[in-house]
Length: 481
Image 1 (cartoon, rainbow, N blue to C red):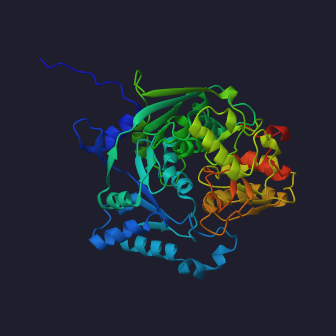
Image 2: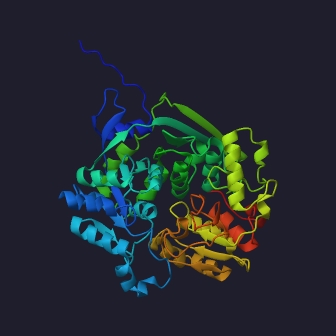
Image 3: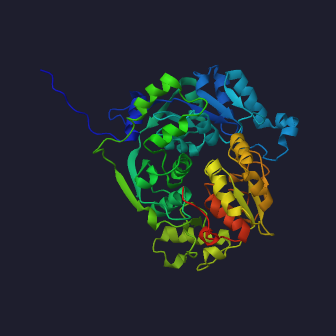
């Protein structure tokens, strides 16, 4: 008589990995050959991979499973469409176009109607679906965890292997659960939440882990908010982040042009609703936060975990007992040109930037516009807003948001990564201080010698109009996500 043995409860992360495992590569199944459903390519991290394929005489296994977008090095100037010759002269963009044509991969080039930042374009098309594994040459591919998909960044050699075989050699991560409960206070957003998480556990606190975000706070978030949270999970070391898909995800996908429709959607929904951690599933580490204890956050240093509530002051390294952290604090404070004890709200800025794959969706622009309406950017501040995609840009123009930005004194740009990583002309000068809605504040990230303070889009808007870091709550705005 056969005996039925129930399998052990599994986490959502483990279910996704198990479902995509082609074969185990060791006795413990820690290393596996993993099938990849989709990828997105950009002009910056793909060239060597295509060169390797060409030299080896290998085709792309499933070109229809890839989308290529121009986003990293391109100009965001409003008049860029008038100079098509400039794009053809750009070595990276022209080589990218050649590669995509030769290997049969769909390309959204600089002049495509839906050009934009890869992690904004993929979701708005409906190409990110619950249950998928998506690997791409960008660390912020973790964004897709907001849909109950497993997304992670890979290097150039892995891109080549994936394009040739649609698989990757993958080592399983440990499971971490971050549970956030309660309602977000006024002025506190998803960006503040994930910055609070990073500050709490540290920039390496999730090394070797995949994070599952859960709790009533996460469940109440919009898709834009969830994408922001998963996007920045990599900044605390996580190589994967997931949120169980629910009605918010299904509603978001319902009108997306490339998501399943009709009977295909009905069949997909049945599977999607099963994508959650089993009761009793074991996590290697659990972190709990109360949403009511989170305040609007800003970074003061050169790592995303060097952050605090806007009501704080610059910490004193001498009071830090850990010698490594004490050294890092000293170095960061010196680079940022600050002094211990200085109130964060007294820090004067030179630039304000709203954009990036973290915070340049329509909800982000709406939040910033709420603060800017009827106000003007401080005279000494140069302010820039770069929508995450051409579609976001059009929607903001239809809603009148673009006009609010321009009347306040922001430059209204075309889509691209822009000042997030300063690979084009959108660069802060040495010594300039920038309030930024981006994901990284490393030394030189926005330009050699530039100083970056990370915060939510609404907080950037508040800093732009006051001329210094500012608690958005004092301006009477900043609704929670």
